[in-house]
Image 1: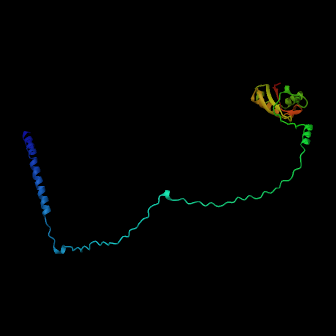
Image 2: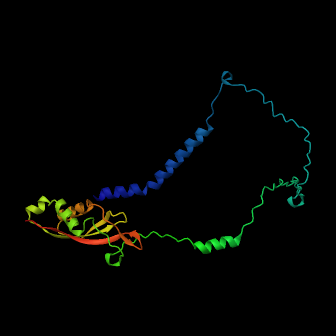
Image 3: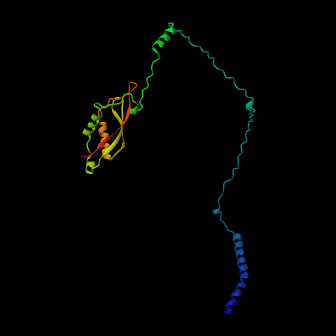
Length: 230
């Protein structure tokens, strides 16, 4: 083991010497390569044509003189020439005719005699029964009206099977022509009975309308319709 270590140390100690020897050999080979000469025969030579040179043509250049630039503020604006417009109005023809004189006193006397025309305002507000001069009336009276309802009512089958009955309270408006409108259920019993009450009331004949100050008016009423199984 000691001999191998000594050999390795001696090898590393001679490293710079080997480097210098290699460097000298490399420089010598480069010098020989640059100094090596190649002999060329006459047959291998190439004759180049003579250089004709560069031809320069000189010509006289004429100088041009540019006029000085005019500043914008020194330029005078051109005057605008406006056309001469003459406004000629066409002659106005006098087509007015003389009106006959009006007698103002005669008109005033006629107005005083007849009085101003009465302004008629249409009244569409529904009245209540207690505030009417003439109340609406079913043709034949209320007994005839309830008789009509009892004859026209068809008891719904669903309510018959379940033995459902009671009073359906309805609100409606008697129009100026006696027809019934705005039928609303105020208090119902069941869906079937409520719809049947509305249907019968819509099928009722026209009433005699109520009147206020001699004019027919709309009247709001409320009635109960009783559904009872025998």
